[in-house]
Image 1 (cartoon, rainbow, N blue to C red):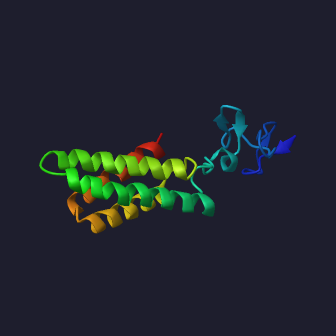
Image 2 (image 1 turned 30 degrees about the horizontal axis):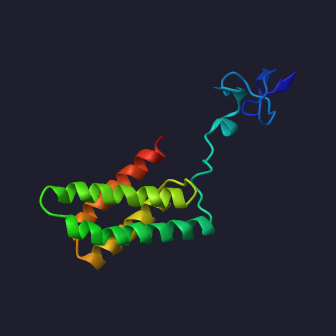
Image 3 (image 1 turned 180 degrees about the horizontal axis):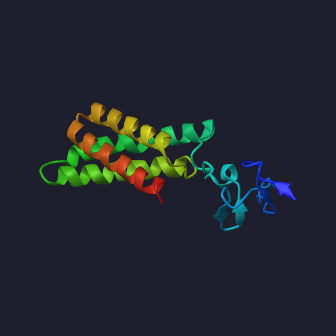
Length: 148
């Protein structure tokens, strides 16, 4: 009979379904595909967290196009109550453009690209308050997408 990899004094017939290490009932973690050892049961980083250089360039280009192009439209129509709505729409569109251009990647990289592009657009157009609202909206949208 095999001995547990974590408790050498405990005999066991259980093995990890991923790596095959012997594990005792104290260390086994129930997963949808069977029992695993604690190392293999930990969540792996998703494929949508690492952005490849080509995808990053595409995300930056899309962010600049929507972020700076939308700044002039947002600055022209902003005024009163519509300032907040336009900022939310502008930030949401920029965040979605960055996410789609990067191949669906979410997380901190997309949020940083969207925020920088929106900030640059706000500086170029002079619509700083709208840009701040847009940055908050973009980061909120990317955080919602990231936590799905």
